[in-house]
Length: 257
Image 1 (cartoon, rainbow, N blue to C red):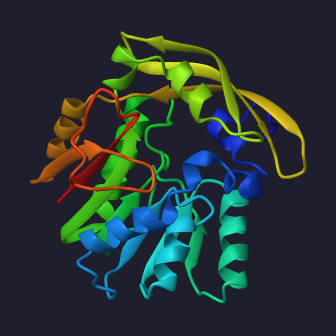
Image 2: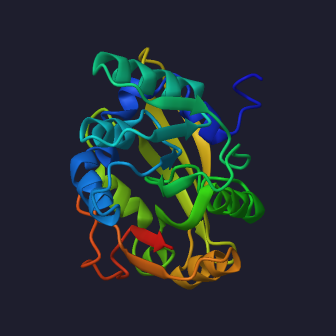
């Protein structure tokens, strides 16, 4: 498959592992893992699945804290390669696999599934594909299991400028967005993202992401059989059930049981 044929999220994460780890949105790992530990009741024996694990930052941090039964999956061979490299450097054994989140090979195997920082969902080009990711996350969970994920908060672009927010968050060397458009009928945002890969090559890609209203997420998860669904504002590096979701939250934190 050539770069022209690759979907934007496939092309984006090619040869982007080291640069990805420098992006502003990847800097909250430790605090986010504090929250995951709390939600896991500090049970280090739990079987945990990380969907869209990227370079493995959460899996590596939690494994360092003593959680041994971790599987990390991602569509990007480049991201998984970087995750394995980092784990090897830390002398950690973690099961990292190249797997499509729409077709996970797991069935009722995990006590906890995490999907953070737009780990697959909601990057897909159709709502049906995004739903497939949620279906597969649900299928991966054992009875009584818990799903924790973050996703784009559909309330935000109604009341705020997404472009202004991204401009304010950008640091030198990070990827940047231009020509951003938001469609109120589809709740899809399209933009041009320009980033520099690990070899210093600049790439510009056309993105297409789906923002979700909280009520949509609740309905989708209830459809999948989740009984308890809680949604909060996702604060970078400071996940908490204390953060009530507001129109100022770029992302929401979802906990479903």
